[in-house]
Image 1 (spheres, rainbow, N blue to C red):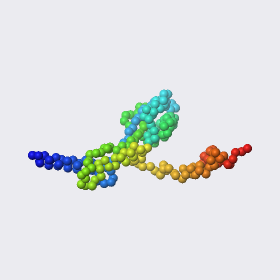
Image 2 (image 1 turned 135 degrees about the vertical axis):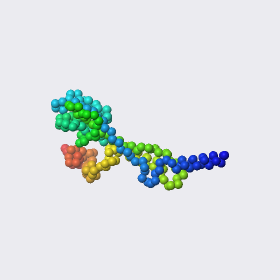
Image 3 (image 1 turned 120 degrees about the vertical axis):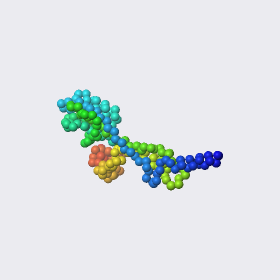
Image 4 (image 1 turned 180 degrees about the horizontal axis):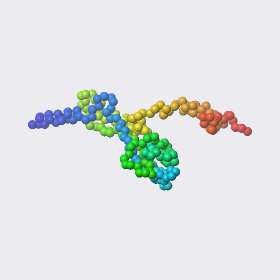
Length: 217
């Protein structure tokens, strides 16, 4: 009876080692997942923009959501919001460094006449299932990578990316940084005469104006 129990226990340990998440290559099965959330508020409109008090209400709502870079603010108005209304909403969005989006995700509920709906669209990125310790490191008869392989780097990537939507759509070339522009500014600063030797930082071309090397008398 004892040998049978020992054999059964050894079989259970062997089977448990074969279970869990299987990483069959060097590309991890744990990849960032991007989710979108939409928040909406309905505001009353007036003759020349938002109704009195509604702009303050919008400002408080945006502050509560703590909107920032990566969020999108837009107007959902089937009748077409006037320029004054768009100007009021755009001014509040600009306080957070945001421009009005051209389109907004669909929301539930009808928009009452005389109102507009301001929608904040926010994306978040995460790696579900990490940390994953479901598979034992040894024995490893199939030469798999560990069950949590890729969790560290992909979780950090999801946490650090400023616009999670870029993980899905990427970025176009015009949005990339031009190193030559930054190099010109750095070069101008290096060529400038030190301020202790009569040089000065002024409002000249490139933001740097070199002095004559001495003070006028």
